[in-house]
Image 1 (spheres, chains in turn cyan, green):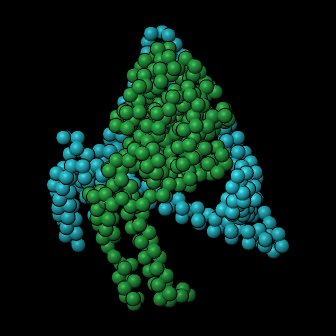
Image 2 (cartoon, chains in turn purple, red):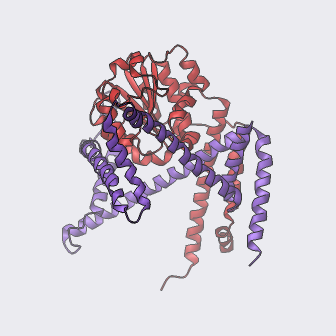
Image 3 (cartoon, chains in turn cyan, green):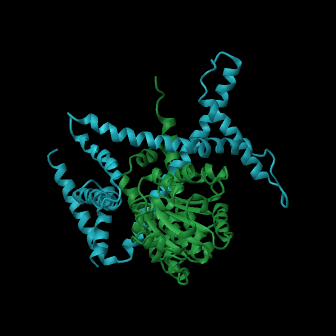
Length: 233
Length: 286
């Protein structure tokens, strides 16, 4: 029962921001951050203790001292004098991360995407269903939009040349393509937020008593606080 | 409608819009409306890919989610996918590269459809929970090259891999037949592509993503790198319907989602009409 009330309190406190900023929202915001950081720190501590500290203590693998010492250098982020020490772990993480990511990026995200685009059939014919008009149109759109977007970012030809003018016109298609893509991304973002809201709303409605009282309480406090803040004007 | 109407609309208190959303979304959550829902080809392909799994292959279930993502769109996706996978005669490895994902794996197992699907499955023989693997992309690379060395700590509860019979044949990424990744963000699908599929190009991939990540992920579906994708909450609802595991609460959620889409569309249309109507009236800039 306590869990339901805590859930309802924090959910409503978070959504009370839609009315106006207030003390309940701040409480929920800070509590969320504290819990998230606390959880991550506890899980991380448990993992490091088992993976690195215990093998050192038991003498199983003393090499774990090296990553532990390097990791400890992060603390010097807070020191003006020894800040340079903090650069060692950052350099190691950035270097190894970049190296690992780049090796897979070329094949998985660069070559594979190019190959797939080049390999698109201009006329799609299904072995059983015959000519597929929508798939054919889709492939044409992909090809035109890819070329248009590439042309938008091609700056090497001057606008006075014939080829430059053609690139510029193709770039217009690219601009429209990007606008459509950004619109789609924005729409999906809104829908994701809505679904998040629906998830919380569904949980709140599971138990009316836990939320109606709290909703009224939060609204009243938010209103009173808002009025108090307005008074000096 | 004269211009003053649009001017008034421009100045409407944003809290009124929030209130309309609260009410519009709240109605179907109180009583199901059974609004129509079409099934997208991506969801059909997602289901077909799991249906086509051969017996005894190893499938990794990447639960790379945050609590917020899980509470909204990814929870239903994860529960439906787990139900479907447990119905198949395959070996399942649950893991996560998000520290917040580990406890949520066990939450998925509490769902009544999942419980029903896994009742004949035995832990260690048919499925395991390897918990959180730290290091994000570095952790993925480590797992891909040497599963046992990466998991010296054992599974989620600390049981050694040697005591989990199904792990005997899982040594590297080459032993994985399919990855199903339910993802909130980074690390997620693209990182698995770089570290796992780049090393094992035969490994099939299915991704369930938040709606916000769909435009970024869809390119991988078009390129054939992912077999298919579940598109946010809508994809989850479609999949639940295909599997026949929709409860009344799910129908209510689906209706609320449809209502929210309609409301946003109405606001978009009205907002754009207002924009064009008032733009005409505004004097040209000098």
